[in-house]
Image 1 (cartoon, rainbow, N blue to C red):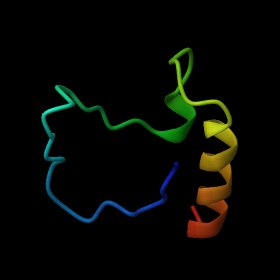
Image 2 (image 1 turned 30 degrees about the horizontal axis):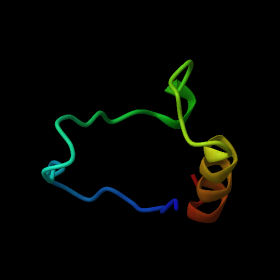
Image 3 (image 1 turned 45 degrees about the horizontal axis):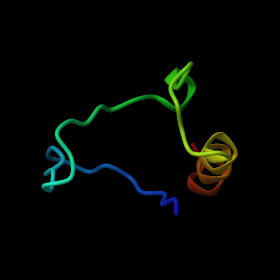
Image 4 (image 1 turned 180 degrees about the horizontal axis):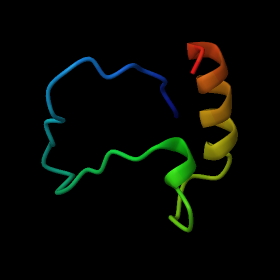
Length: 51
């Protein structure tokens, strides 16, 4: 499941399942292992958000 959102302020608050976060530009995913189809979801979200 993917979500599109705009960051407005503050820093992420992690739950017990997570120990780190990283802000990345959509074109900086490079060789990271990501969910299949995520790059198309990002492209679609950017179009919807007018980015």
